[in-house]
Image 1 (spheres, rainbow, N blue to C red):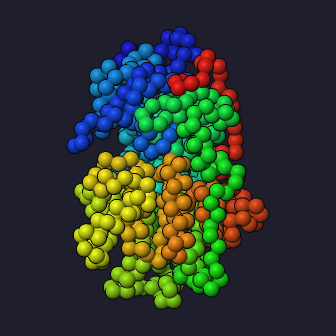
Image 2: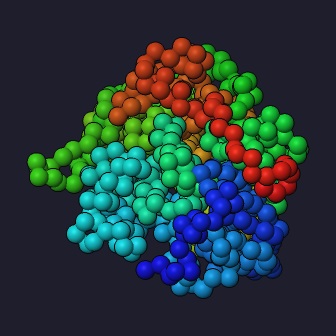
Image 3: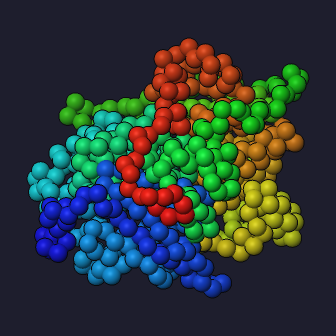
Length: 568
């Protein structure tokens, strides 16, 4: 039961043209072993009913900290030092924990950045959505399962009834993110705080999710505070932009105005770095002489099947990879693109022998490794490395960053302690991190910084093949540009081969020599990026290209402020 003091003020006749959420002078800091670090410094921000307000900025700029401070879901070492967070008539900073529980979930929904650590691994997806409905009195124990399936369907999860019976580890990264979105929208809140809600989603599913959030704003007046590093998404969907750097708001105003005439140098830098907003290709893959393009990896008629939960009709099997044939040439980049669940990551795992193929053949440097075991597998591990999609789950939280990066060198007994440390420093420098990062733990880094560490670790052994599974999806656009430049430089210097998996076609266009488009486990089209992007043959490829963010212009925001500047 929501206390009378916490009821919706708009029902009491308040002016709906006032901001639903107002931040004034918000300052947040974190206590670390090295002292107190200010993360947010005097932020002013307004979010209006029926509008999408996007907060953009580099990794570590304070945008996610600002979002979590609103509902006071900061880490234990985080503290609000000053300022107010007014939601309706109430300052959320001053509310008791009991009062906050009547707001979180019911009136403010939160979509966290990382589905791997936000979903309970031992509970079925449907049960986790149903729990929200029961807690807020929106369903009984009997009706909750069916309503949970309906919510999952609204969030764009395909075959929602089946997915409701599965556990998080049985879903792809994009499907897990949609489950989180379902949890956030289950109670139909007035405000949705979406912290990088589409960073793990392919462009078509991203469009479905963002279309749904947009319908919420238009039909029910729901406000959305969208935290994103994807300026294409912000440009498409937000009526207002708030640009943050080093914990401060450096520019804010209507999206159209900022895109057309950015006032701050930092904003101009971000816009120039966004691949989906750039009409030219800033980075063209280096052409490799014909003699050096012998196949490093050949995949022939690869098949992988998984068992699905048993239904009333009996056992079911999913063919995740269906008769896939690919060739990766030395010194070149093959990009796999397609929707979440299309089989991209499963194909990569089969190539690396992290999973067994049901049928087909995998050749690595002319050797059949389809059923490799023992010493042959260990040799493959040294020559082929993986950059995981999720920087939160792929780094051991007990290790220092120095230990994380040098772990492959220790495992293969390469060098001594001093040479390994020197190699770690060199790699950190190449991925644009200071050497002081060596002493820190993964929990002390932002998501983008963790992904850069993961890339450094993958490069430690100077492998022949690096499989990049969404390697820049968690990075802001400027760091993304640095990492793509780094990958291109390494390829030019060393001849390393990349299998590059991405849902971001704007990124793929910049880095790939060849592109393979996958759908429901099959390769439907292959070719050089220039050909696929200008003359796509398959209808599915055309759908993917049409869904690239950055091509639309949002409806202008109503006149809610008198000027444009460093605060909304």
